[in-house]
Amino acid sequence: MSRFNCAVPVDEYLADSNVLFYLSDAVTQLLEHKEEYTQFGVIRYFAEYFSSVKNSNHILFREYNYIRATPHNRASFIRVLWRCYRQIGKSGDLLSMLEYRSLLQLLCPDFPAEMVQSAARIVLMDDAIDCLMSFSDFLYAFQLQFYYQEFLDSVLMIYQDLLSGKSPNTVIVPTSTSIEQLPSVAAEDNDREEQQQDGVEPSTLAQCIDALCDRFKHSHPPRSCMREALEQTDKVSYYSFLMSLAKHEAINQTIGALPSKAELLIDPEMDQELDKLIAQISVSPGSNSSGSAVGGLKEVQRKASPRRNIHHRRKMEVESDGSTEETDSSEN
Image (cartoon, rainbow, N blue to C red; front, side, top):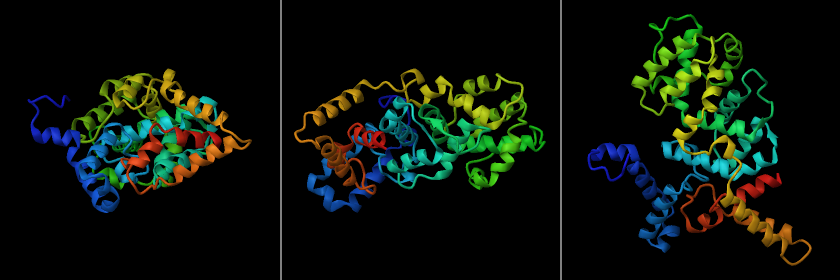
């Protein structure tokens, strides 16, 4: 939607852009830290806050309810996750679900384990949940699960109804309130592992998903992509369906947070910054120069309080492109 399209009603534009949400958060942050922020001037504070929102830096170290509050916040968090830990993919390291959870909690301290486990199940499907995963596989699965969480929860409810033998006419299409009553992932593990081996008729599931899209208030993947994924097999399980969606390039482009899989590990801008950092370390005087430089980076990172917003001037200087977080992750 163009911000200059005068044909769009004001209320609709405000709702779609979430301007009031960000304005409210900016005021709340200002009141909570007014002694710290007002020394730079209120006008400058708001300018830096909305600049950080535009540049997708605003979600770092914020609480989980904030990073999932808007589609822009979710896409921003996915992009920051990629930029901070891209080096893991370049090195070819395989990590467990618990290790990915730890990495996520470095960016969002209260990030829930259930979300990480759901993303891991998309990758592992029938395998044990403690198997190792590549960074690219986990990242695209996480993107799908995190960005479309409410929709996927509703699809799961429909899938379970179909597995229980209900006809499409008697399947209850979930609402935004009913998905909150979903059983926890852990409680459903055993049943789900048995059920996903059988699967349901793709055409039946597609019919129910179409009905869901007609009334769903949250974001959902393009219908054409979901139909394409369901046409690939005679029987479809919940997690095989999600894996097909996670690999779908059109869905990746719709979200707009990650590059294509072929370009996932390519980031010339970040590589240039890393080369500069390595060059600075290599020319530093003293035998322990590299340790001192890295230690200095860690010390600066410790000063960035998880409770404060990234639009703070000093924190923006530390975080600018995610290079410090990536350096720490590569050391681990």
